[in-house]
Length: 259
Image (cartoon, rainbow, N blue to C red; front, side, top):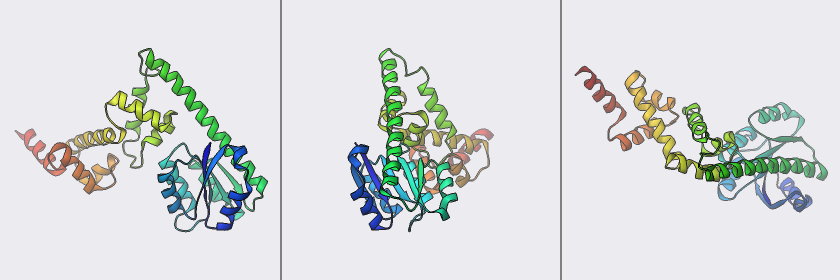
């Protein structure tokens, strides 16, 4: 059974969806509500959400921004947006950033039912594909391989490709490779000996060392180049790992070259 999150600043619309739609026939077991994008993201952090219906014109946070951040939290969540004709171009832009479907207002009970049916079907297709792929990889692992003989390499390539992407996350990696987040987390620890976040930070800091030695980039430029948005956080992490600041590291390395 899937969990649905309805995001709309009009309580009458949220209540209408909750009371009129036949959730059981769609395989929906839970329905959560939020009146704006910020509250919706908070719900997603507290509860597993599979499907989202969101108004594109919301207060506090734009519909596009909410959809982008929702996908960052869980790349596997399926999102449909509700929009008026005035926002149709906006809706098309949303589709391009990963939204799965949209419908034009006003909507009838049947319109919502059909929209949710399409959304749930997309979720089932994704889950089915992921389950089959995981089963194949489990068999391969039992046979002594690393899951298609190249999963570790695929992960390494993805990390390299997204190294400068400050928003890159395990859920985004899972979506790109076609795995569930929990299963990929297990595989990641098996292949790399630690969790995704710590390993990615180590890779970024190692790349930062190379940039400090081979370029004249400033600290904030190096931080941005390796996907760390906050230069202060970059310096703290660098010092914690290498027992020296980026500036001191560059200075000492320069002296060593002269000697």
